[in-house]
Length: 402
Image (cartoon, rainbow, N blue to C red):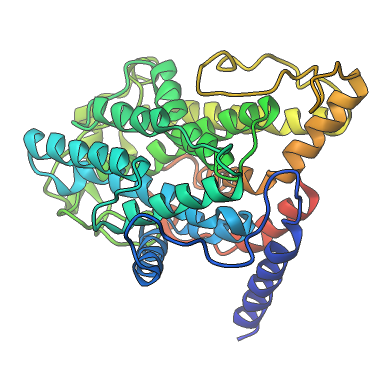
């Protein structure tokens, strides 16, 4: 009873924090009334779409649902739509039995994204909420704030490459997958606030890579021993046992091939022995270490910015067309900015959007649990909800550090 009451108090505190902390007019203005729907969708349909997306997160991505409290109120619809889009597209391989059906579902989502950006959404909840978020962003920023359709298409294209369960050739290809999916989701969330910041995008890139790599580790048992369609979930024991002796279907081992070679892991050994396969824990350790390295890098970048220093290394994707920034040595009037002004500007930017970085907290908690269980990725405990996330998230958000 005490634990239940304590958790309820933490959640109430987080809710109040989310309401009071996001008052930074530099990045957005919280609307005082609901945005009208100029795209032929009623307010009731928008609210129904919001409930659908929220329920989807609760079932398949509970950490993202918990972290919604730290997203600016004006951006929460965009956040829900983005995370629901991520779930729907990542589950295509689960619910589609053939390559043709997978291709059709991918085309369905490409068509949905095109329709959403044209403000003509089909009667699909994620598309309706995304269209509403795009229209709201346009109204809040008087047409200046935009989300990148190219980034949505990039996510779909990257998922398509590995939808047949093929392993990643190298660790670098896994990082590229994480960059083009999970990091890109964070870029889109930043655009939904909106804010254009090299420092914020750079930190988001490392956090997204860590989250994407971790997602592959979390899903490894489910892909190696797939459950019946529609049963995959990362929040509970749904999907049945992970014991290879009690599973009949075989899928694929999606660890990078170069890591598997170095660790001496054979796919058939994983199918036969599960967690006890020779070299598997060493391979999982190496992949988890790379995810942890990205979190460490992001954390050090935050420390450098708070100390008024340079972030430490260049952002390799800064020159991409979709990353739009005002020149970082100019102020808002186009005048040259002093080094001290640049540091203060970077600090203000990353503190103002820190809620977008909160997946780092959930990722770190899961990696710590993986280490606790000696990198046995098949442990059922790793699929349970993380009860510490609300209060760990609260303290990270309050201190603006994870």
